[in-house]
Image (tube, rainbow, N blue to C red; front, top):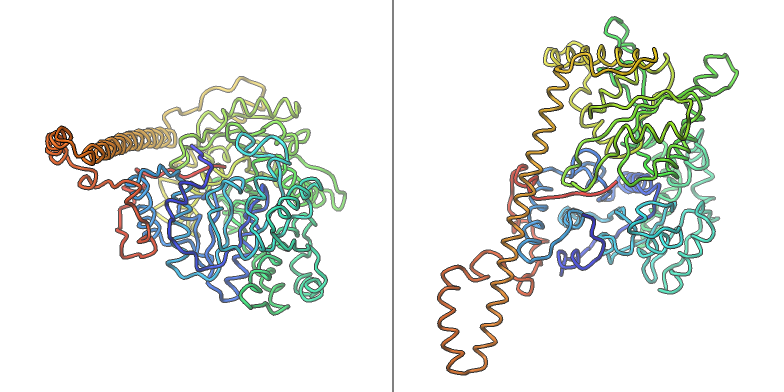
Length: 597
């Protein structure tokens, strides 16, 4: 479960130094984009940079990178194991995100980064990342309603949580598109604690030095104003951070770096991806046809993010395609949305921002999130019912089986040729998509003998989904899949059974660990009581102590059991890698729990 607060992370990182400077980023939407551009600028400036963002997209360790490269898996597992064991040994009870945060900051120090770009997980004030005491600049992106059970039900309450990352005498920057009363809450809090100065979004010196240059205009060309804000905030944050170390950027370099970085898509954010196993045309000799059309993949999962996604889709997908089709006459075209959302999200408001008459909707689900048993996908039927209540004219289909690629197979036949397909609603859905597609994302997919069975399986799935879509379009009740015992369904059932088995095993292990911890604490309490009795100096106390010491010694005292109390635990060794032992991937996966959407 999510456990806000700084007590546990403080105990994990007690006496650990942060010799690097941090750019700390909080907010609701745009945090990841700011972090991406900030880390890119620092890395291209030849400054060693660590980046920590959450949640992970595919693997737990992909939330941590050094110089824009995902951290080595073995290093991650070694240090993560150390903090898991420390938490158990000292009775800290750290949450999965606190373990991940400690792991990230430890890796930054071990890898000798000069700057760390850190995205707050949820909120700011009580977020584990707020243990930082080395901020060069604090950044607050666009604030919207999300995680209201933890942060509050009003924007003012949420903004106050986000403002918690500010520090006395540390410059801070706020997204200028925030509501004026939200900005006022942040500024009032900054004044109260002595944070600042507040950085201008349009400083005259930087506007002249950077933002008026041809290289910057080349980067911003064809971007909407809402798309420029986060990259510009990244530039302002980085230049401020560099100044704290007496460094600077050459004016022309910024625009060039930003333009080149735009050529590389940010995973999970407005990705245009070709999916040959689903959309490729095996009968065509043309390379482009074999790959098929691109789909848009975006991790938007709250109403504000849906609005930004809708702006992009309206300008780049609906109008562009109709303009091409009608030779210059702009109009709107239907979009096929492939959707899954986490339980607890405001699905109605999210879909209200996206759906238009005559759109198509396919609802699906995502699998269990690594180590996060509290995260669940909405029932696809329930999500489809909400979509139809928002926009009654849509054509909709709820997938009875999990599997993003299967849902895309259905989308292929529900979508007219050249019409857009957008996969969105959850970063967990996007993560499932990348996990399923990653092993198939190779150039010679259609000819490589190793994928013969996979190609056969997809041919089978496509036949099944074409049949289901035809049933839907003909107005008939949708029957179960044409081939209930298909290879894909067998594999889906096997994977689900294996995940359930692993989840049960992890739950059992955690229960045993908690029992051991409780016994250790009982033993420590008994030892304390015995010491207190012994200090009275009475003959009876001495006799009692003599009687009790034998059994305790035989059964194992707290110091002998391998589990020390919090009072005797010192994590100073956590900054020294030789003190950490390696572990296998399976051992770590049994004991850790990551985080949220």
